[in-house]
Length: 152
Image (tube, rainbow, N blue to C red):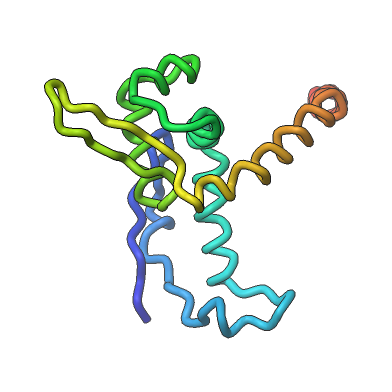
């Protein structure tokens, strides 16, 4: 059976048990509608990791208004470092959510814009953001209740 060796994401640590993970032999196409397979779950988890990281959706939503240059993006996203913005943009470009356009000039002009796939992500992200805002107080209350019970 084939195995996959995972590289740790920034800020995570791998133990010996995180290597040599078997690759699922079932394709997503083979899963019955509404069914579950390790392959489909892995795919969803991988995509949700991108959507759920600290910076990616801030970049996507910042680009929702149109094309921006690197420093415009950096100013629009409070607290992001140059290195992290570079890494985030590369990941989003790799995933096909952002396109990078270099215009030859001195200095070179680099613009970032959402692809059609990236634009299709705006609505679900906005809806999730609305859900978070609407439910924030209930989540805070639940955390406080849990922490109080956990301390006793």
